[in-house]
Amino acid sequence: MNSLWLTENKDNKNFKTLDENISTDVCIIGAGIFGISCGYYLSKAGLKVTIVDKDNIARKTTGHTTAKVTSQHGLIYTYLSKTYGEQFAKDYLLANEEAIENIKHIIDSEDIKCDFERQSNFVYTTNQSNVNKIKKEVDVLNSLGFPANFVTKVGLPFEIAGGIQFPNQAQFNPIKYIYGLCNSIQKNDGEIYIDTTVYDVKHNNSEFLTLTTGGVIKSKYVILASHYPFLNFPGMYFFKMYQSSSYVIGIDPKKSLFNGMYITEDSPVYSFRTAFYNGKKILLLGGANHKTGTPTTYNDSYGLLEDYAKKLYPNCEILFRWDTRDCITLDKIPYIGQFSHLINNLYVGTGFNKWGMTSSNVAANIICDNILGKSNKYSYIFDSTRINPIKNRTEIKNMVSESVNSLALKKLKDSSVSFDSIPINSGGIIDVNNQKVGIYKDTSRKCVCS
Image: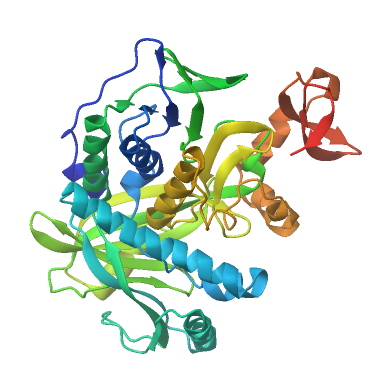
């Protein structure tokens, strides 16, 4: 069963497939909300933009999101403040708050009809033992100057022990929004190609050659917006994050619904928001998270959500079922910016940690500012070349051991080679004293750890 967003927006825009060699200023690989947002900003700035996707527009994670436009990314601000300092936490908050306003500005200026609604967002608990954790997060947010509120009533059809209210957040239809961006890109002479698979990117002096099934794209800049970076080296992003699967059902509750967006701090995680379908408000209920590749059953995925929905709304009707995979970083912060110190003009945005609506706009602004020669005051937060996440050895061990089809495990198994067999300007994983080490061999044949 398709997602609500893709069911409502099946074929209202036709795009072509690449069938020739072309040149452009910026080649963007991936036509989800991050790639399309980059294309929007850069084409508005006058650059020639080419976007290419192996599927159709926003058919992967973006088309299967719950599309909450919020800076409340779980209970993250206590963690950020304690780990990186108060200013770091405040800048993370401001970056995502600005992203909400950026999205609203685009919607207004481009006259995009995408069911944008201002809503409060809530993180709540039904467990009394978690209330102090909730209150601590409120205190941290208030110290950062944000008007978060501690609440005990949120409008859900059950009692809570406590929650945090983030005012002035939003929700929308992500596919309608993206098609609005596509219209603007094409008006600015940008090109969008679908059903065109990129299988390699070559760097030659000051230009890139993006190799696709339909032709070669020559460009000065490349943005990897393909959800999970398909280039393994020298970035080694496969070893710095994992994928998490989650599920959503859309239901007609057969009764009136609340306002607001919600997610629980408790386990199992449940997420709520409303949406419009055939002129009627329905409920989107999400959750049942697990590491991608870990075996699961219907009862532990859709069945878990359906049982919970019927507990809350006994007469409800199941209208939609869909699932998605999100990239989760080891330190809870997205990777945004230069793909590697070793390659100029190659950029990446990934690891949005299930909060891709604001994170994609933050990423698009940081990378577009970089390409346009502008400074961005938030870029330091999301530095994609940071090494610290690899220090989280416990989570790396969990990534490899808990996920049967772990991408990190597969890459480690498949990529172990000898130093001499690695070509110049290429990377690989070698065994050093029975430990896996990622390296990159530069033009002088020196080894650089990635």
